[in-house]
Image (cartoon, rainbow, N blue to C red; front, side):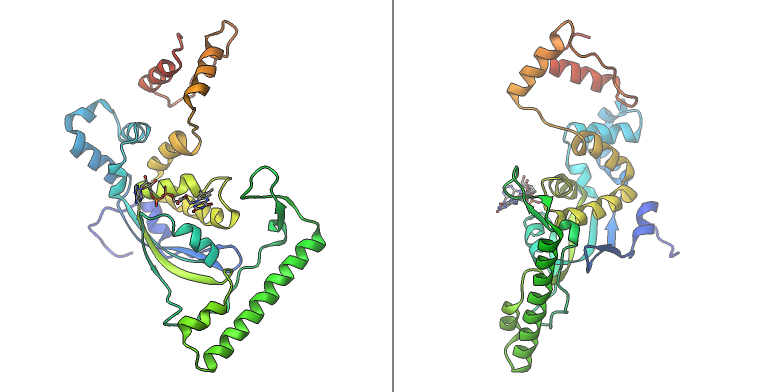
Length: 285
Ligand SMILES: Cc1cc2nc3c(=O)[nH]c(=O)nc-3n(C[C@H](O)[C@H](O)[C@H](O)COP(=O)(O)OP(=O)(O)OC[C@H]3O[C@@H](n4cnc5c(N)ncnc54)[C@H](O)[C@@H]3O)c2cc1C
């Protein structure tokens, strides 16, 4: 291994350059990164100084920062990944504006013959509960017919595209023949705070399957990179739920009844956190 004076994350060092397969032709790999759990702590201590001594250890401090939405220490960590993804996934992904992106240019280069065809189990009917989503699996014959159309459509489009290039049509125009299932490639750089935000939106059952699988792959990488920050993210964002004012009233009403639910806190939830929770519920324990 190369010697370096940089602070490293041992888990992330193992991830560097490892290519993760996603969907049928997709790929995702870590190109570079900066920072680790200690960088978050270091930034927090410079900003809060002596005030942070109450947080007895680094993990407690990271949990405190996440719980109270102190975001900037998490911006001290950055990651750069390479991704190969279908254009319709890229279109959703690019909406995350707080990243830096460089994409393969189909004006400059000829695009590869790679098109997304969903697996049989992912060809599903329109959801009846979520207007944007998919629901039950389709019957096998209909699903196979759709997959066949995907393949034929891509083959015809790519053949027309090649013919157009050979006939001298400019690449920037010839590409307009290609469907949104075609794969593109980019480098994507983002800080940890905004990547956690990306996780909360795209590693979520409401997100489309085809972007969710990329988010799940990134989640594994994040757990290797900043394990303590990701434990805090899981507790205060990933597994958490925000209740509205009216919902809080209902919950307060339930717990205030004599026969209301009584449960103890799981290990790891500190005294201060317990007090904040019971105060929010106005729960007299
Ligand atoms: C399940 C799902 C369904 C969706 N459906 C649709 C849809 O039907 N149509 C559609 O158009 N989009 C849709 N989106 C995209 C969505 O509206 C957001 O554009 C996308 O999720 C990026 O979120 P973001 O803006 O919070 O993230 P980022 O762009 O990464 O921004 C992160 C945060 O930075 C701040 N920020 C960034 N830029 C600005 C700015 N210019 N001004 C102020 N604050 C800023 C905001 O606080 C923002 O939350 C959908 C997203 C999801 C997850």
